Image 1: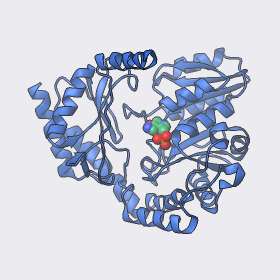
Image 2: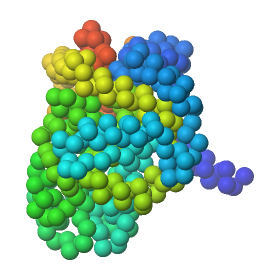
Image 3: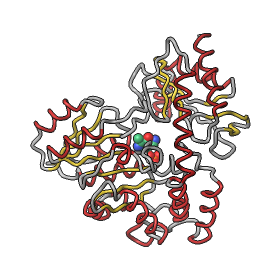
Length: 394
Ligand code: PMP
């Protein structure tokens, strides 16, 4: 009984701080209009930025992939689970990254979380390595840095001067700078050109987690490297495939030698069952759409929705940090009020999650609105009107 009591005390402490999370059950496919816990809602919470998760061609490709390759891979990649579908996808992804990384190769992993663990634990495997981690990095980069043997220092958000001072003071044999490209809870962009210049000057790798940029940023949806026009053999790029690409998994693109090191040494790649090959097969169709006219139109529409929300939201008290991306936070502050506003929206049939610590810093609880190319202008207008009204009433 004591053991259970101690767990219950921890849960009670979370509850006292309004930090208990509740999962809602989506009864229907991921889309702006869905049924959740039996009730129709308009959702602004997924990372399905182009609406590919329920795209008929992607769904048909997944079915075809299952027919071709079966349901599961059966083993890890280095044993027998590496299928033709994985190999073809990796070639496509390497081509995708090739304009930005010399001698690029790509590696497909089951999740972005594991991709970040893989990169940082393999590149930062030695105790004479150093990882320089941006303050607002995603939990998976933070955890990768914790798992690595390298020394870790955190540099303040977007602060190139502070990072330069840390790089200059370091005598590490291997230096690795790790950053999100699009910050997942704020939507702002890292100053990647400045970061790459610093890395080149100090002989450091630049690891870019483009989870929220892949498929969305850049004229052809190649992501943050295309958006900023960057190219270097020292870029290590992580793109996730469960967000804009609509399916699941992630890839690392880097110089062929880095990828070979990962295949040989990255434990989150080696010691896990390969993702179902059907997912890799379906992702080929996602990539086709991302790079097509349809992809261009979806990105242009998404951009117009971001602009529309900026114009129509008329908030006086709640802060709206400038974000050029589909991630549009509304800063509320206290956990309690963020939950109350999210509940108010939900009562109006609008699903927007409240994000609380430790996902965001203390006292910065917020609504994380995410827009998708699948939303309509009318739907965004409904959200803006509801938020304006709720702020006025609170
Ligand atoms: N990096 C960032 C910035 C993310 O937001 C996420 C997912 N929320 C991940 C990595 C992890 O990706 P995945 O969901 O594929 O594990």
